Image (cartoon, rainbow, N blue to C red; front, top):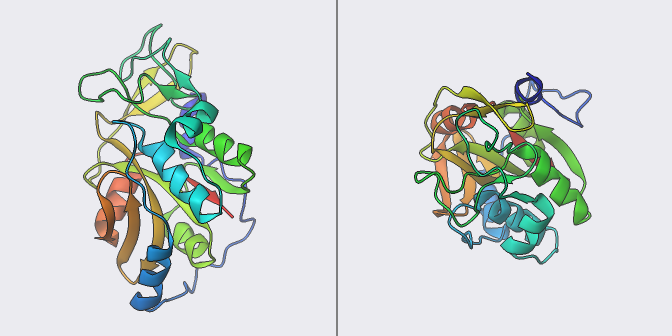
Length: 227
């Protein structure tokens, strides 16, 4: 199960040593100011939250892009548009966006994309990717955000934990799937037991660390962190 290992064993490209014993603590006002500094954009298509989240990160780093342009760098697989079950037409979100970015998860016409293609797209715009894949714990993510780095993370849409099942994609890779709940947001700050996010569907808001941890765990603590 190459993809399972890729997700759960943490495909990270940074942090040979992180001191997590003492996490930096920021005043809420300072975190709020940093959160407001991150541009917010509504996703331009029905299911392209990953592209929209990366668009916010790009804008924060001075790069102007639109969702469709970002998707062209991520890659869109319309040849294998199915998901959630094994088969020759089932797509691999570790390789490209599965299905129609303007489709619907609930109707089975469009799904999404996981960390590696998003990281590849970020690099194509000149950004430095510090971490990509699964296994980046909330504590590690807090340290990176406190250091001024930016993150796109994967979560359940309602910030709940769902157990995944695995299906075999057209390329033979095993893919984790939790139902029509996959979503991506940008994390902008941590303050105590609160996490600030830019959600490309619902806007800027704060969420409790417990709910954040549950939703984030659904896809194995999967993130793309850029310098």
